[in-house]
Image (cartoon, rainbow, N blue to C red; front, top):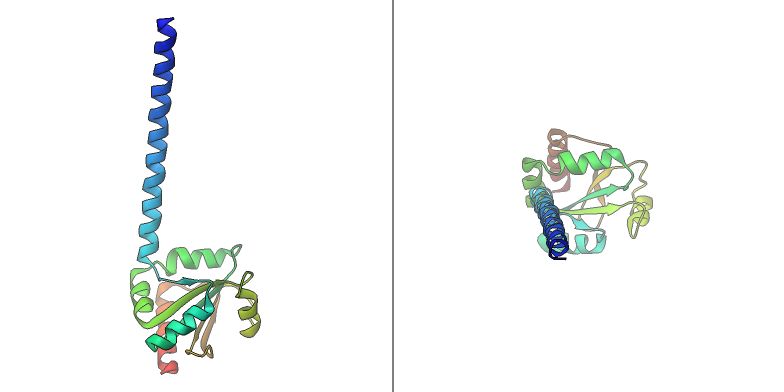
Length: 156
């Protein structure tokens, strides 16, 4: 009888250790994801009106990323380009950044308004939402910075 309790206790102890190991790994991954997000461009998600209001208040242009969840180039852009430190610093300093799923909430309305033909579409607008400059498709950090600098010249 005593050996049954010992075996059961040992099984529970091993199970608790395994659970603790995996939960700890999950938390570490959550921290890694958060740190990755903190490195990139800070986007207002799905709220076009908030972005415009903030742009008016701060007297900045709006950088709009219209994407689709199924879009491979959109995912690459978010993973590679938007997380580039130089890109993130430049965009966070000079623009109000907003990211919108072109197929949800305000996305379809914006896709019609700006005649979106593909994803990702990157648009810089003035504080009224008037387009200053467009780009369609994946772009690397160097080209995105050139795009941003050209938008600032045109928008001022």
